[in-house]
Length: 356
Image (cartoon, rainbow, N blue to C red; front, side):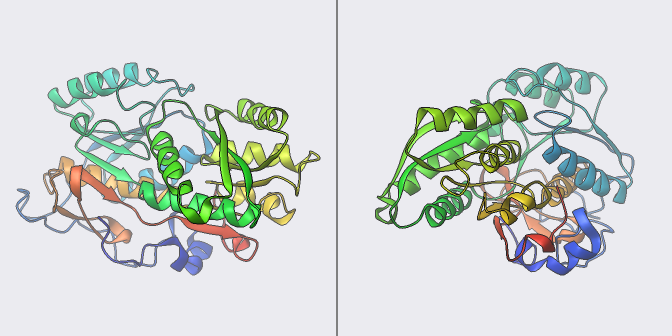
């Protein structure tokens, strides 16, 4: 559950321009100490110093996670005087994260902050890590709730689905037609949840002229995503639009469309960063796309980790904690904390943001 609306990226243009990656919040509160949470056991509400907090993304050397972890999580951990690290696989396969979880548990890491490649594959290792004393925060992509303490969600799945379908509908136009989805990996928890919600959204009367004909997976690899986009157009010659709700996929698809005969004929939207997509918006390949600030997501996940490891919160519904410059957050049902709503970028505003 999110407190207030000042953290929405739409209200943060000036801050983003001034402070770059970590400044898409209009809350200027200093990140000194977390506020007390009702009934969570830490009377002072102060995050302990010296906590070892390690981020374990779906894959390292991914531009999205470089921002969320190193421009967001690291900043937050340094603010409350902890020790930050990032580790993880170069391949985003379902089981690739397991050995890293085991190692972090053996190293007695205080909090593992993980974006899960698969909601089930990492659960055994995470449960063992929790038994050994580590706290577990998922961010970006969740596990089963019993396998972690808190999930920091970038936006509600329903909000993302509505945003993506509205954008592709607007881009395709009133006549509608065939559309396809180019996702990340077939096991990505967040991607699969969004796709199912998109299907629900497409069933509404206002989208009756849109027909989802295919879903393909680029595994968050640039080359494979590029090839999958190419394959979609070869397989579906009447395709009118592509949704790619992944930063790697949408940029690769845009690159393919921009250099092909399909430019201006096949619409594109998805979840991307301004720096990735700016040129493609300006050349007409993509009219609009969406995202949240990934740096803020990592920043919030780090503060949730610090509050959890300090006993300020336990992960139960109603717990409150202070997330530095982002302000106060409340834990919702199933241990979920929501960053905010997706924000739409287009030709009118994309130059006002500089991240990704």
